[in-house]
Image (cartoon, rainbow, N blue to C red; front, top):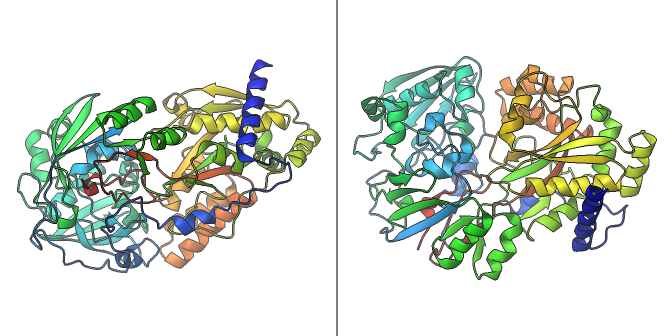
Length: 579
């Protein structure tokens, strides 16, 4: 009883914070509103490094055989645009696995190590692939998307002065495809990579066993981890552990020092090939501060200049006279019904899922948890135009508490228990609070939600191995805006038999659409298949979309401007921080 009263109290607080909570009031804020502001850069006075004209011809939506446009930028093109000076300190809530070896690291760890590496393709301000800020000047596909020809820019050097060549890139791909590699993209490489053949000092061909029409996305740091590793240095230090202790890249920052669990430090690479991305600060120091209150205290004292913050601490950041900055529309959060293909779970019935979704006032939750202007209610995980399958006509599900309560009664679900696993990721500390808010609405509708605090590592094995979960449950799921629709479907929606990870839905029709979409090389057909998948998920109430959110950083007065990449939680571009 005490737990139910607490949940109802939370519900009342949410409704009070958001004004009118009448049962038949629809959520009027549409997910497409995010698209209208998605192109807006994080607060900055500096032009975005990647011009949008490049994005128009290098995005994933173009034909696979279109060559990415060449750029005339070279290492010796111009004198440095800035002279690095001083130290900038960035506070993060987690260092992830704290490895400096890209072959064993994951996407959320990129802010920790990616500052000193280059990727083959850069990104425009909205997270689309572009050659303007990448190591490649062209990436061209064969008609069947099995063979990709890559041409590197000349004049790039690793931090020890050795030139970056096609041999290094081929070697890097071979490393990522090894069985022992464990990066975000390594699983895909292990399954599909066939060979990398050097055809010239700056050219190579990468061959896959099956069509890989989405390879362009894999070459950026928006959602993947395929950084360029120097062959000569990897072999000299003995690989793996040796490289982790003595990392070497070609990026805008040079690794300098670290203390495990405390900090990692980099020095500006004044010889970097792109003068516009030579760091403004001579030293980049990244410190670990797990608690949001600690990160805020560091900002207030001036001991940190930039800190990743929780959404609910944003008012405190502003009250301290600091700025809110960061990339826009980075991810969409959804509530997933755990494995509804199991007939013994009550939400196997679409009518039950519809009643549960109708019972939740998503607009009220977004308004109560996120600062104004930093999140919008979502209708689909494909919430921004750069994602295949994005449908601007979709609107968030209508909230109707009275109808939902009646349907729950009619379906015999009054008092039905449902476990709600509460855990947080580094970039989404608000997950547990969202679960509590949804639980409050479901309690009011007549269900009996059971909140269970845990961490994802604890329950992850249950997604991967039998007997899976034995009771109906929910968990929160996020899709970064820069990811491919293929990745989103594979991780969060399709069945395990079709290659899914969460195996959250597993509708046979959806599995079939995914199979055809994954191997389709024609961009128009691929877009149509992605759209069908998004529509099917929406029409069958497969998941409850919650919000498309910004990344919220507190920024101190020593920073005049910053150009992170919208649509990505990983491409924070600390080299663009300017004093």
